[in-house]
Image 1 (spheres, rainbow, N blue to C red):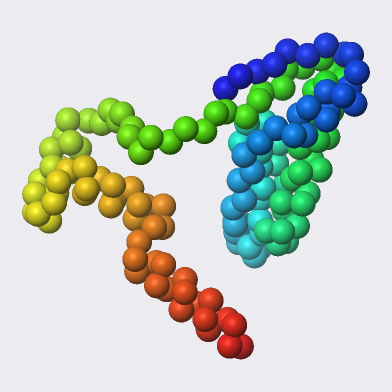
Image 2 (spheres, rainbow, N blue to C red; image 1 turned 90 degrees about the vertical axis):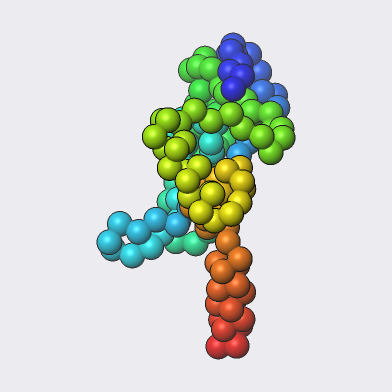
Length: 147
């Protein structure tokens, strides 16, 4: 991640520059036991986050908070991280314990698929990407539109 050092020059011009950069907005639903709410944060800006009642409200508010965060850092002469370049090749290098490697290999062999395919499926399942989940989401959406 590139971090740009800034002086206290023309803050408005610098704000325009940072406003146009493609920062990563992350929106997640949280529940602290008092009911669900939405948390939005800017991945590249430390501690730049808010919470709101709806995802749309969270996105709207985080964009305002982002600019306040950047302005505050500009005024204090603090560094402002810029967005990371996003290039996804579909390949990652992963170091794991030999015992986990062995277990994953055995499971893949049991399923009759390659270790690569087994690990890709396991990762997809862990983040909620499965045919079953997609089917349930469609059914849930369909049910909600009928109500």
